[in-house]
Image (cartoon, rainbow, N blue to C red; front, side):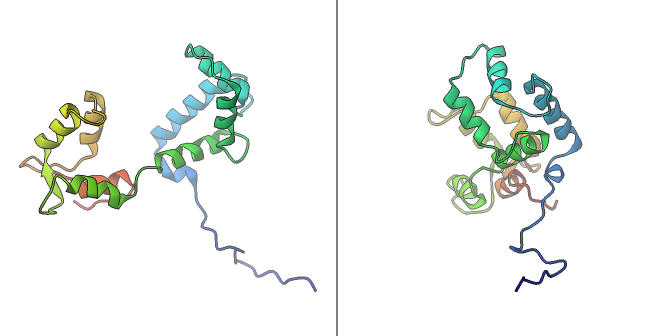
Length: 169
């Protein structure tokens, strides 16, 4: 006997997502420009030849294995929506919020949620260990950071913004 369909119910309770809602109009426009720079044959899809041409324009000669692995990152043909989705997944692929906060807490022994901006800048640009931020990266970080009039960097707010959450003023 055939199963009855129930109107309005989804089989697995999947959540509907709109990939375009994850980016603002300016970001979508920039990604569209990037997509069409890579889509050398202008067929609306990024394929192996498009990636090879892009690498060649950058003076690189990738092997087929690398190009194939890049193409396989998309579950379907790489059209613009799949391209956006791939970027959303990559951008969302940061460390869990708790892990990021714990890293900042190392410099906040009282767990106040804030550290001195000057000390943080020193650590991120001049410390003898780890990857250092350049001026552009530091500027981008401070653009979204919450720093009060006393020069305190609110790292929990920063982490929340980094993970795409709303932060109250």
